[in-house]
Amino acid sequence: QVLLVESGGGLVHTGGSLRLSCAASGSIFSIDGMGWYRQAPGEQRELVAQIISGGSTNYADSAKGRFTISRDYAKNTVYLQMNSLKPEDTGVYYCNADLTPRIWEQRKQFWGRGTQVTVSS
Image (cartoon, rainbow, N blue to C red; front, side):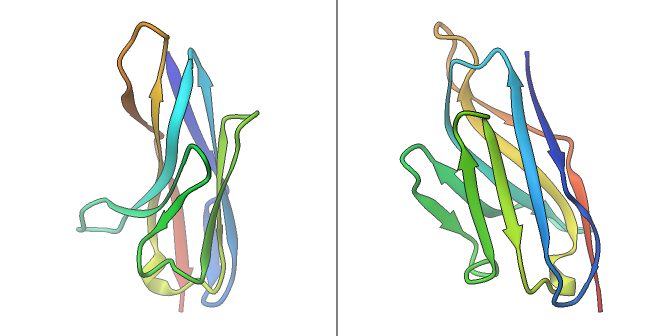
């Protein structure tokens, strides 16, 4: 079984910073990519940032220049440093991992339970 656990959410004022962490644990053979998605109230879940094996990154336009995704391969952990936060960044942030649980299994998507980020104006 694979478990993704997020931490680091909270309430900040506009212009503040937060650092989200997500640790993957359990039966993991390999991780191809990890990322962060945001779901605002009444909205669909959308990609914020992702990082794949080799270190390539991809950001939503709204995150470029303000957010930085990074990964600790030894700890199976992904981070999202969020600076210059805006009220529109508010939402539940979900960690995502694209991984192979066991060598004989197919690659699958796994999700964390989410962590709330609220940016007050």
